[in-house]
Image (tube, rainbow, N blue to C red; front, side, top):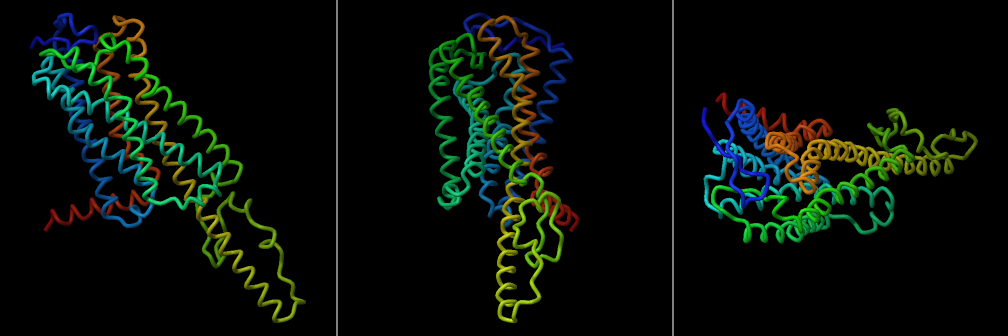
Length: 364
């Protein structure tokens, strides 16, 4: 059995302790490579769907999902493979420049994911709680791209200084890790600004949006009746019907009045249809956000709990638990495309079309 060395969770100035590459670590390595492959394929599929489907590309919300897909692709080709290699060799087999790039992108893509989710949550909170002001600003793709740009800026401000200080101070051959114990002056800042704070903002916005949508009935609008009004609206949608639509027409009115009334009624029906359509759209976005946010919190919480424990007790967590929690984090990048398909009929349709085209091409 091959002997390897622990990359080290403790002070990088102490020699790493040897350990055996046990079946547990072999299983972790195999799991990492499988996760990397599925993550890469799934998120490339998301990017292809957005690029080839006009219906998806017209929805501003999907730009956030594209940004998440880009970060997840980076995770699949950089973060996961190099972590698997680091475990296999029991240390860092490459130069320190490669190590610096890996640490920058590994942690950086994590922060970018949560900052993007914060941007989505704040956007939904604004749209739900102040819809008039939200619509007045004429929300465009440019504003959505600005929000994504702010997420990237937060990444640079919060992560680059701790990363730079660590690489300039604790860089040594054979070891490649951003150690909590080595960077105690930054560790709590990174934990609060990079995870705990954003998570609280997300949860607050989510609860507020849920409350507003539940009161308005938008949570129960899943289908929209045609503008002509021939189909029955979905359950829950009837709670937002206007009184004018529920009153029977007055047969005693003259022909002119009947025409005027019919025109007004048709106009109200069109307005109502647009309102229902908007509410159904908001519900779909809310469902997508729910899946993505819950998956992120569940998959990343174990690692951040370990991160906090290491801050107070550097020797309290074994390398096995650290690896397991880290693998759990990477599963989030693999789950995202599945969640998009589960919560969006448009993504499901686009995925099927792309996969079918590939099958047809390969059969020719």
